[in-house]
Image (tube, rainbow, N blue to C red; front, side, top):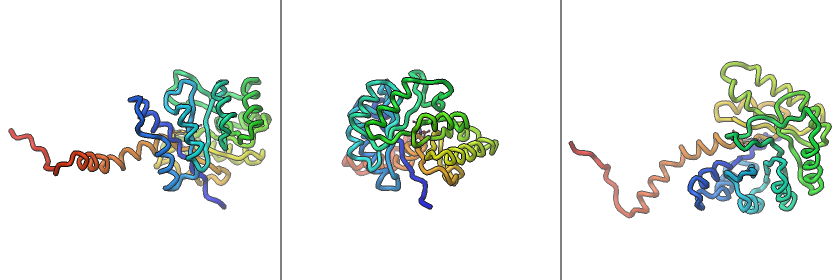
Length: 246
Ligand code: PXP
Protein backbone atom coordinates (compact mmCIF):
# COMPACT_ATOMS: atom_id res chain seq x y z
CA UNK A 1 0.00 0.00 0.00
CA UNK A 2 1.22 3.49 -0.82
CA UNK A 3 2.02 5.80 2.11
CA UNK A 4 -0.49 8.53 2.95
CA UNK A 5 0.11 11.69 0.91
CA UNK A 6 1.15 14.71 2.97
CA UNK A 7 0.14 18.12 1.67
CA UNK A 8 1.44 21.04 3.68
CA UNK A 9 -0.85 24.05 4.05
CA UNK A 10 1.42 27.10 3.87
CA UNK A 11 -1.26 29.75 4.64
CA UNK A 12 0.40 30.82 7.87
CA UNK A 13 3.65 31.65 6.15
CA UNK A 14 1.57 34.23 4.30
CA UNK A 15 -0.17 35.24 7.56
CA UNK A 16 3.22 36.27 8.92
CA UNK A 17 4.06 38.19 5.75
CA UNK A 18 0.71 39.97 5.78
CA UNK A 19 1.30 41.08 9.38
CA UNK A 20 3.82 43.53 7.87
CA UNK A 21 2.50 43.70 4.28
CA UNK A 22 6.03 43.02 3.08
CA UNK A 23 7.56 40.31 0.91
CA UNK A 24 8.87 37.93 3.58
CA UNK A 25 8.43 35.16 4.44
CA UNK A 26 7.51 33.98 0.95
CA UNK A 27 5.04 31.06 0.91
CA UNK A 28 6.47 29.91 -2.43
CA UNK A 29 9.97 29.55 -0.96
CA UNK A 30 8.39 27.67 1.96
CA UNK A 31 6.48 25.45 -0.49
CA UNK A 32 9.70 24.46 -2.26
CA UNK A 33 11.38 23.66 1.07
CA UNK A 34 8.37 21.54 2.12
CA UNK A 35 8.59 19.52 -1.07
CA UNK A 36 12.32 19.00 -0.62
CA UNK A 37 11.67 17.42 2.78
CA UNK A 38 8.80 15.00 2.32
CA UNK A 39 5.68 16.94 1.35
CA UNK A 40 3.89 15.38 -1.62
CA UNK A 41 2.08 18.60 -2.38
CA UNK A 42 1.07 22.05 -1.23
CA UNK A 43 -2.27 23.35 -0.01
CA UNK A 44 -3.28 27.00 0.21
CA UNK A 45 -6.60 28.64 1.00
CA UNK A 46 -7.47 31.72 -1.04
CA UNK A 47 -10.00 33.37 1.25
CA UNK A 48 -12.49 35.93 0.03
CA UNK A 49 -10.99 38.46 2.51
CA UNK A 50 -7.40 37.65 1.33
CA UNK A 51 -6.19 37.66 4.92
CA UNK A 52 -3.16 35.49 4.11
CA UNK A 53 -2.73 33.95 0.65
CA UNK A 54 -3.03 36.47 -2.22
CA UNK A 55 -3.94 35.90 -5.87
CA UNK A 56 -0.30 36.29 -6.94
CA UNK A 57 0.71 33.57 -4.45
CA UNK A 58 -1.72 31.18 -6.10
CA UNK A 59 -0.32 32.01 -9.53
CA UNK A 60 3.23 31.33 -8.35
CA UNK A 61 2.28 28.21 -6.37
CA UNK A 62 0.80 26.79 -9.57
CA UNK A 63 4.36 26.76 -10.91
CA UNK A 64 6.21 25.78 -7.73
CA UNK A 65 3.98 23.06 -6.29
CA UNK A 66 4.38 19.50 -7.53
CA UNK A 67 0.74 18.96 -6.63
CA UNK A 68 -1.35 21.99 -5.77
CA UNK A 69 -4.54 21.76 -3.73
CA UNK A 70 -6.40 25.06 -3.67
CA UNK A 71 -8.89 25.51 -0.83
CA UNK A 72 -11.72 27.84 -1.62
CA UNK A 73 -15.31 28.71 -0.81
CA UNK A 74 -18.00 29.40 -3.39
CA UNK A 75 -17.22 33.12 -3.77
CA UNK A 76 -17.58 33.85 -7.50
CA UNK A 77 -14.29 35.65 -8.15
CA UNK A 78 -12.24 33.00 -6.35
CA UNK A 79 -14.03 30.27 -8.29
CA UNK A 80 -13.33 32.20 -11.49
CA UNK A 81 -9.62 32.41 -10.61
CA UNK A 82 -9.54 28.66 -9.88
CA UNK A 83 -11.18 27.89 -13.23
CA UNK A 84 -8.63 30.09 -15.00
CA UNK A 85 -5.54 28.65 -13.24
CA UNK A 86 -6.79 25.06 -13.00
CA UNK A 87 -4.96 23.66 -9.96
CA UNK A 88 -4.78 19.87 -9.74
CA UNK A 89 -7.31 19.85 -6.92
CA UNK A 90 -9.86 22.21 -5.40
CA UNK A 91 -11.10 21.58 -1.88
CA UNK A 92 -14.37 23.36 -1.23
CA UNK A 93 -14.72 24.67 2.31
CA UNK A 94 -17.26 26.81 4.13
CA UNK A 95 -16.03 30.32 4.89
CA UNK A 96 -17.22 32.94 7.32
CA UNK A 97 -15.60 36.34 7.63
CA UNK A 98 -15.44 36.39 11.42
CA UNK A 99 -13.94 32.91 11.86
CA UNK A 100 -10.30 32.42 12.86
CA UNK A 101 -9.98 29.30 10.71
CA UNK A 102 -12.36 26.95 8.88
CA UNK A 103 -14.58 25.92 11.76
CA UNK A 104 -16.74 23.10 10.43
CA UNK A 105 -17.41 21.06 7.35
CA UNK A 106 -19.73 22.11 4.53
CA UNK A 107 -23.39 21.97 5.44
CA UNK A 108 -24.83 19.56 2.88
CA UNK A 109 -28.21 19.04 4.60
CA UNK A 110 -30.14 21.27 2.20
CA UNK A 111 -29.96 21.79 -1.55
CA UNK A 112 -27.33 24.43 -2.31
CA UNK A 113 -27.51 25.68 -5.91
CA UNK A 114 -24.43 27.85 -5.46
CA UNK A 115 -22.35 24.89 -4.32
CA UNK A 116 -23.74 22.74 -7.14
CA UNK A 117 -22.89 25.44 -9.68
CA UNK A 118 -19.35 25.77 -8.26
CA UNK A 119 -18.82 22.00 -8.47
CA UNK A 120 -20.07 22.04 -12.06
CA UNK A 121 -17.74 24.88 -13.06
CA UNK A 122 -14.65 23.39 -11.39
CA UNK A 123 -15.43 20.03 -12.92
CA UNK A 124 -15.82 21.59 -16.37
CA UNK A 125 -12.38 23.17 -15.89
CA UNK A 126 -10.95 19.66 -15.32
CA UNK A 127 -10.15 20.19 -11.64
CA UNK A 128 -10.37 17.29 -9.18
CA UNK A 129 -12.88 18.28 -6.49
CA UNK A 130 -12.86 17.43 -2.80
CA UNK A 131 -15.52 18.56 -0.31
CA UNK A 132 -14.49 19.37 3.26
CA UNK A 133 -17.11 17.74 5.47
CA UNK A 134 -17.61 16.53 9.01
CA UNK A 135 -17.12 12.77 9.52
CA UNK A 136 -20.85 12.23 9.27
CA UNK A 137 -22.70 9.52 7.36
CA UNK A 138 -25.35 11.86 5.96
CA UNK A 139 -22.76 14.38 4.80
CA UNK A 140 -20.91 11.56 3.03
CA UNK A 141 -24.07 10.43 1.27
CA UNK A 142 -24.80 14.02 0.22
CA UNK A 143 -21.25 14.39 -1.12
CA UNK A 144 -21.70 11.21 -3.13
CA UNK A 145 -24.98 12.59 -4.52
CA UNK A 146 -23.14 15.73 -5.62
CA UNK A 147 -20.92 13.58 -7.82
CA UNK A 148 -17.51 14.66 -6.48
CA UNK A 149 -14.61 12.17 -6.49
CA UNK A 150 -13.23 12.99 -3.02
CA UNK A 151 -14.02 14.25 0.46
CA UNK A 152 -11.79 15.69 3.16
CA UNK A 153 -12.90 14.60 6.62
CA UNK A 154 -12.73 17.40 9.20
CA UNK A 155 -10.46 16.11 11.99
CA UNK A 156 -11.17 19.05 14.32
CA UNK A 157 -13.40 17.13 16.72
CA UNK A 158 -10.73 14.40 16.99
CA UNK A 159 -7.93 16.95 17.40
CA UNK A 160 -9.74 18.63 20.28
CA UNK A 161 -10.61 15.47 22.15
CA UNK A 162 -8.04 12.79 21.33
CA UNK A 163 -6.42 12.84 24.79
CA UNK A 164 -9.74 12.17 26.52
CA UNK A 165 -11.60 9.69 24.36
CA UNK A 166 -11.31 7.30 21.45
CA UNK A 167 -14.83 8.12 20.29
CA UNK A 168 -13.75 10.83 17.84
CA UNK A 169 -11.11 8.54 16.33
CA UNK A 170 -13.72 5.79 15.97
CA UNK A 171 -16.01 8.30 14.24
CA UNK A 172 -13.21 9.11 11.76
CA UNK A 173 -12.46 5.43 11.14
CA UNK A 174 -16.11 4.68 10.53
CA UNK A 175 -16.58 7.68 8.23
CA UNK A 176 -13.45 6.84 6.24
CA UNK A 177 -14.57 3.24 5.71
CA UNK A 178 -18.07 4.33 4.73
CA UNK A 179 -16.75 6.97 2.31
CA UNK A 180 -14.53 4.38 0.63
CA UNK A 181 -17.48 1.97 0.39
CA UNK A 182 -19.35 4.72 -1.51
CA UNK A 183 -16.41 4.95 -3.93
CA UNK A 184 -15.15 8.28 -2.60
CA UNK A 185 -11.45 9.05 -2.18
CA UNK A 186 -10.78 10.04 1.43
CA UNK A 187 -8.64 12.92 2.66
CA UNK A 188 -8.46 14.38 6.16
CA UNK A 189 -7.21 17.43 7.97
CA UNK A 190 -7.56 20.25 10.46
CA UNK A 191 -5.93 20.51 13.86
CA UNK A 192 -3.52 17.62 13.26
CA UNK A 193 -0.27 17.88 15.20
CA UNK A 194 2.93 15.91 15.74
CA UNK A 195 1.28 14.37 18.81
CA UNK A 196 -2.07 13.33 17.34
CA UNK A 197 -1.38 12.57 13.66
CA UNK A 198 -0.29 8.90 13.84
CA UNK A 199 -3.69 7.24 14.53
CA UNK A 200 -5.26 9.25 11.68
CA UNK A 201 -2.44 8.45 9.25
CA UNK A 202 -2.99 4.77 10.14
CA UNK A 203 -6.62 4.75 8.95
CA UNK A 204 -6.23 2.69 5.77
CA UNK A 205 -8.82 4.50 3.63
CA UNK A 206 -7.30 7.95 4.25
CA UNK A 207 -5.02 8.71 1.31
CA UNK A 208 -4.17 12.36 1.92
CA UNK A 209 -3.56 14.59 4.94
CA UNK A 210 -3.61 18.38 4.87
CA UNK A 211 -1.60 19.88 7.72
CA UNK A 212 -0.68 23.51 8.27
CA UNK A 213 -0.58 25.24 11.60
CA UNK A 214 1.41 22.65 13.52
CA UNK A 215 4.13 22.42 10.86
CA UNK A 216 4.52 26.19 10.47
CA UNK A 217 4.63 26.55 14.28
CA UNK A 218 7.31 23.87 14.52
CA UNK A 219 9.27 25.50 11.72
CA UNK A 220 9.57 28.67 13.76
CA UNK A 221 10.88 26.74 16.76
CA UNK A 222 13.40 24.58 14.93
CA UNK A 223 14.53 27.48 12.74
CA UNK A 224 14.91 30.36 15.17
CA UNK A 225 18.39 29.40 16.44
CA UNK A 226 19.79 29.43 12.92
CA UNK A 227 17.98 32.69 12.17
CA UNK A 228 19.60 34.47 15.12
CA UNK A 229 23.04 33.08 14.24
CA UNK A 230 22.66 34.43 10.72
CA UNK A 231 21.60 37.89 11.98
CA UNK A 232 24.67 37.95 14.23
CA UNK A 233 26.80 37.09 11.22
CA UNK A 234 25.10 39.77 9.09
CA UNK A 235 26.02 42.36 11.72
CA UNK A 236 29.63 41.53 10.94
CA UNK A 237 30.87 41.62 14.51
CA UNK A 238 32.09 38.91 16.80
CA UNK A 239 29.73 38.12 19.62
CA UNK A 240 30.26 38.41 23.30
CA UNK A 241 27.33 37.73 25.61
CA UNK A 242 25.91 41.00 26.95
CA UNK A 243 26.06 41.08 30.72
CA UNK A 244 24.26 43.65 32.83
CA UNK A 245 26.62 44.71 35.60
CA UNK A 246 25.09 45.82 38.86
N1 PXP B 1 -7.94 21.20 5.72
C1 PXP B 1 -8.78 22.25 5.55
C2 PXP B 1 -9.96 22.09 4.67
C3 PXP B 1 -8.52 23.48 6.18
O1 PXP B 1 -9.36 24.51 6.01
C4 PXP B 1 -7.36 23.61 6.98
C5 PXP B 1 -7.04 24.92 7.62
O2 PXP B 1 -6.84 25.89 6.66
C6 PXP B 1 -6.51 22.50 7.10
C7 PXP B 1 -6.83 21.30 6.48
C8 PXP B 1 -5.24 22.56 7.88
O3 PXP B 1 -5.56 22.73 9.24
P1 PXP B 1 -4.38 23.02 10.26
O4 PXP B 1 -3.81 24.36 9.90
O5 PXP B 1 -5.10 23.04 11.59
O6 PXP B 1 -3.39 21.92 10.14
